[in-house]
Length: 95
Image 1 (cartoon, rainbow, N blue to C red):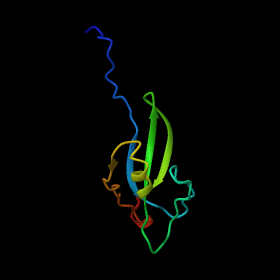
Image 2: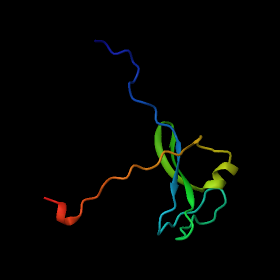
Image 3: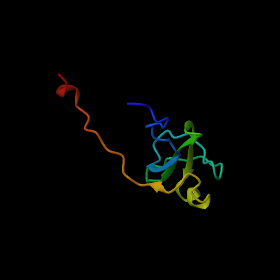
Image 4: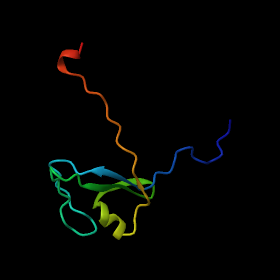
């Protein structure tokens, strides 16, 4: 079959996902410049964006949840699908 000159590869584009702020986080919010901080008693959320330029991955950007809205969602609507949790085996269960 002859090639038509079109690529079957999907063009990668930037995306934004909502995630918990994890302990030890040391990133700064792109919008306000403040640190995205973990607090044990408050489950803060952050928006993490994989940014693609010209179809190639360029960088990761972090935002406070409300800062992403204030920035007018620069990388599109936030995907709020939860992270799938995998069951970890106890050392005694490994074969």
